[in-house]
Length: 137
Image 1 (cartoon, one colour):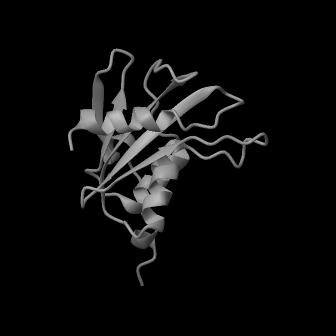
Image 2 (image 1 turned 135 degrees about the horizontal axis):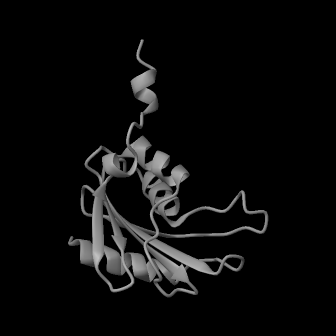
């Protein structure tokens, strides 16, 4: 699957956003190693703390279905569903990605002009760790 195809699915996922407070709709499309794609959107809550990001929605759906091997994610967002700039994953989403993804996991971010920028998880989250690396006997 090309980055552009994955971004198209992320844009589609934006339409499912529940964002009555911020009005920022965010969509994500997660590519599993076997070619399966999971879409996610942000889901807000009036108390803000229970709000979940699009990236975590997609990852949690995939994990629930038994997937643990991911290759890429596309993320896009904007006010009232209009892409206004890049929406890089928040810190919590980055750490969730680190739990399941390798350093070369690709993150695609869209620009308002429709172009995509690519980075790896290692670039997005330098000096990170996995729990397994610190739990060795």
